[in-house]
Every structure is written in structure tokens, then in C-alpha cells.
Image (cartoon, rainbow, N blue to C red; front, side, top):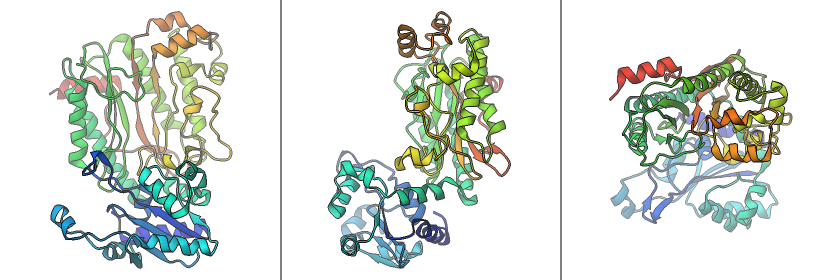
Length: 468
């Protein structure tokens, strides 16, 4: 939690950007796992509520009046029975004062505030909800059915939140650096433990333990799999096999709920084969290309396309692709190997603000995703970069058997793909390298005081010298 002034200033800026009406920000409630009293732990507050109110307690609602400047924090004080089980917590009034909010009341007050605003014909701004309990509360308060709430969300409020949360302040960057250090420890732990015979789930459990011991928890469900061609492959009970690659995509979240997101692809037996190295080196080169060209004013979609062209050139050299490079990229042939975007926004959410609508977060009036083309339809970030943005840089090359079969049967992009050569890589798996990129005044830099090894020689050396 930052100082009181941070949240006061954020709310003041939000009032000015939205302009009029009342803003209602719903915090999260506990989320039961398999029965009501067994909730997911630790509790995770809604990120936008955290950004403006900074409070981790359950069941809170924040109200900001853009016209009068009045602010409210609403929630229920705990009773003696709660204290027996969970200990003493501050009152709603104390919580409000801690973040510079003058008015506080019990949760039921929200109905009175909403009703008064409706009777006066005032605009009520809400963000699109993603939890069912908040959807039900919005239906009770505003009469909007859950299936209509995404469309009913305030575009003025969405745009204001995106504008503010996209540009990271110095204190936010410090938190993101701390998150990167957690990520470093998670990934180097994996590198130390990877060896034939250990299960994917065993190593993933050790990785997650690092995140919990150093911060709040992991920033998303850890991806750890020998099937790197599966974008979100969760860890299984399969044993690691010599000669295969294992992809580790994970990140840590700080106590103040800022995230990191890194990916490394390691050889199970500590040494890349010649075939693995030649593909890995292409991904490595693409990964580093972004560092040289991403800067304020440049569209991240153009950085993505530059990476796609470089990847296509290198795959042509290996005989996996053919034809004109620019035309191959224009037709989306590279998406056979690289079916996702180069990166996404990062911050309090690992896919920062994705719940507000990716079209608002990752794109602007001059950059819109091409939803008709495979690959580009998965882009999460294309807008012009600004100083203070934090984005991921995560190129990858994957050999997906089902996709190979589908495109080959259809003859899709056959003028640019050598299917006979591609068949030789059918069981290769996938490689991804990912780091978090801060856009600076004149260019960009990777976050993280400690660099997780990623060049093949550095990965091999680290695994050999630190094996456990």
C-alpha cells in the first residue's frame, strides 16, 4: 500500500477525467473454492479498486462524486465472532481515513446513494464486472441484467482508468522491479531443479512456493510443460525426459499486487540439441530486436511486425518457409509458428486491465486488431508506446501438430510454407522467451535488476553450475 496522498491524487485525477456523475467501484468478495467456508487464499482485491482506494479488505465499495467532489467508502464492520476467527481489523471509518476518504458507512448505504442519483437523473459510472457476486449486486442496484452489464459499463470511466493505469509512476516501477526479482528467483529455481525423472508438477510446486514466500503469490497460474507448443500448458505428473525442452512461463506478484511475467525454455538434460539451438537462437534474436526499436511514439503493432519479418527470414534460411518475406507476413504465414502477439500491458494485472476490454487497453483509433486473420486476431497490444508503459516482449516458435495438419490439408499459405520440412519438426514442441519491458524517455529497457539467463550458452552454464 502506498501513502495516503497517492490514492487521494489518483481519485482527484479520475474525477477530472470522467467529468460528471458518480463513479462506483466495487471491491471483491471472497471466492469459495469447493464450499462456502473454504475460500481461495490469499484474497485478491480488484485491481482498479486497489488503484484508487488501496485497501485489501473484502466487501468494500468506493463511491466518487465527480460534481461535488464527495467520496465514500462503504463496507460492513466485523463483529465479535469474526474477530474470534480472523482477528481484529480496522473499522470502515478507519479504513476510509487511511486512504483520505472523508465519508464512510455500512454497506447498505450504497442503495441510498444509487437511488438518489437515479432520481436526479445523474450518470452512474461502473466498470465491466467479472465476478458473479458483483454482477448480481449491480443487477439489484441498477436493474441491469448481468448479460447486459459489459455493454452498460461507462466508456468514460474505462478510458479514464486505462489512461491512468497505463502510465506507471516511479513508485509503481519500483514495485514492478520487486516483482521482477521474484520472477528471477522463480525461474532460476526451475533451472536448478530441471532434470530427467522429476515431474512437471513437482518443479511447478517449488516455483509457486518461491512466489508465496517472497510476495503475495504467483501473478497467474504457472505454465510448466514439456509441451511448449501448448500456449497455456499446465504442469502434469509427467516425468521430464532427456532430450526434450520444458517451457516455464510464470511470474510473481508483490505484496502491493504488482506483477511480473517471464518465460524461459530449458533443455531437460541441460544441453540444447543442434536442432533445438537453431530454433532457439531465432527466438532469442527476435526477443532482443524489440529492445532496439521499442520507444515512445512507435506502434507496438509495428514492433510485432518487425519481429514477424525477422522470424520469417530466419525460418526461410532453415528451409521451413519460402517466398517473399513481406508477403508471407501480410498473409499471416508466420502464424503457423507464432500464433500470438508480441506482448501485452503489464502492471497490477499480469494482462493489465484486460477485464476493461482489450480494444480499449491495447489499441487506439489508429491501431485495431485484425480479427479476420489467424495470429493477428490474438494481439493484445498494438497502440503507440508512451513513456512509462510496461509491456511484455515474448516471441515464440511453436510446432503444433493439429495446426500443421489443418493448414496442410487446406493448402493454407502453401506458397510460403515447406510442409515437408515442417513435418521433421512435428514433435519439437515450442520455445518462448519473455521479459517485461519499460518504455523510457528515449527508448526502453528490461525490468529486473537481475537478468534471468536466456541465451543458450548462459542457460546451459547456469543449469550446470547450479543443479540441485
